Amino acid sequence: MIGVRLSRPAMWLTGITFTLAACGIGAPSPPIQVPVPSAAAEAATGFDNRSNGAVNDSIHQTDQAAFDEVEESADGLGPLYNAQSCRECHQNPTSGGASQITELRVGHLGPDGRFRNADIPIARGTVVISGRTLVNDRAICPSAALPDSEIQERVPDTETIRTTRASLNLLGDGLVEAVADETLIEIARVQRRTTRGTIRGQALYVPILEAPGETRIGRFGWKDQHASLLSFSADAYLNEMGITSRLLLDEVTTLCNSVSEPNNTTGADGLADIDRFARFLRATKAPARDTVLAATPAARRGSELFDAIGCATCHVRTLATAAAGTVLNGGTDTIPPALGEKTFHPFGDFLLHNVGTGDGIVMAMPEHYGPAVYKVLWREFSIDSVGRTRNKMRTAPLWGVRLRPRLMHDGASLTLRDAVVRHRGEASGVSRSFGKLPRSDQEAIIAFLQSL
Image 1: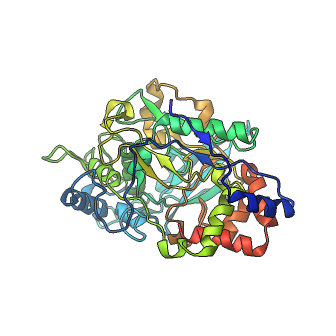
Image 2: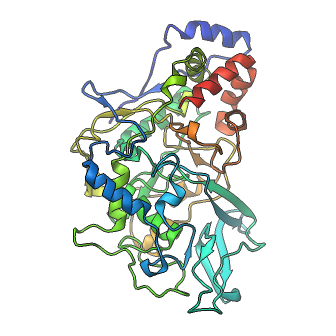
Image 3: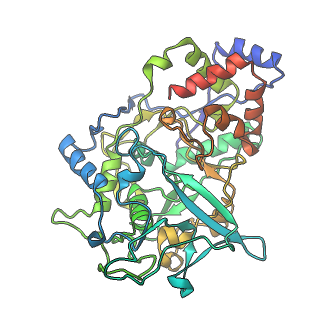
C-alpha cells in the first residue's frame, strides 16, 4: 500500500491563518501530500511535441501523425460521429491538449426515479439507438450512394436530462496511468478522515477492455470511465469517430455502413491506430507552467492561499508514479523507466466528487465497454458504485488550465472566478472561504491559477 499523509502546516501558513481567522474563516485541512520516493525525478513538461522518453522522438512523431490523421468514410468513419481526428478535439496548444469542443449527452429518469440511458430514434423513427448517453452531431449520410437515408441523431423531448461536456487535456496522461491504484484510494480515505466526511472522493473500479475480467481505478474521462489509455483510445475511436477496433467491434448503427469490422485493423508492425494513440499519449510531456507569472508575488501568495483555504484537498498538487517495471492494466502493460518513479503536478486527485455541478448522467456501460459488458464477470466492478456517480464528476486537473477559455465539465464557466464560486456540494466550505477573502487575496489566487 502506498501511503498518503497530510503535511504539517508550513511556517508561512501562520500569517495566512491569522488573515483567514480575521475573515471569519475556520482553519481548513492542510493540503494532501503523496510521499515521493527518494530516487524520484521530476517528470518532463512542455509543449514542444517531443517525447518524454517513453519512446524516441521519431516514433513519437509517427504516433502523433496517426493521432492527427483525418479519417474518411473509406477508413470506417461513422456512420455516426463527432470528429474526424483525435486532434480535432485535443489540440490546444498542440496535439493532445484540450479544445473548445464539447459533446452532447442526454438521458431521462425512469418511473422509479433512477437514471435511464437515452433512446434516440433515427431513420424516420424506424430504428432506436439505446444503451448510450452520447448524441453524435454528425452522420455520413444522406450521401450520393444513399440519398434517401436519414440517420442523423436528434434529441427527442423524452430525454429531459441534457448536458454538454468539454473535451479533455490528454497531455501527461501517461503519468496519470502510471499512478498506483493504492495512491488514489488512499487519497480518498485521507479526504474523508481529515474533513470528517465532508469531502469524499470516490475511487471507482472500471473494466480494462484489453484484459477481460480485470479492473482498475478509473482516472480518464469526466466520469472516470477508464483506467487504461488503450481502453480510453478504443472508446473515443468508436464513440467520437465511429471507428471500430479489436476492443470494440460493434457499430452504433449499421445503417449506411459499408466498411467491414473492425475498421481499425492491425498493421504489418503489429500495431493498430488505437495502439499508436495510446503510445502517443504515454509519451507526451505534462503541461508546462507559465514560469514568468508563477514567479510574481501575487501568484506566489495565491499559491499559499490555494492551500490555506482547502483547494488542495481535491486539487492535489503532486502525485508520484509507481516504479519502473510495475505491471499495469491486468498484466497488459509495464511502466517504462521514463515514467517510473516520477513526480508530477496535476493539481487534481482523479477522483469523483459532487461539487454541485454534476450533470445527472450515469455512465452508460454498453457505450464505453461494448454490449458484451454484462457477459463478463469483472473483478471488483460494482453496478451500484456506478449508479452513485450520477451527480459526480472527476476533479478537473488544473495543469494547463491557463490555456482553457471555457471551464468546468460543461465549459459554462468563462472566468476562473466563475469556476471557483460555482463550486458547491463537497466544496461548499472552500467556496465560502474564497468568498470571505479580501479582494486582493482572491485576485492572488486567480493569478496563481493563471500560472498553471
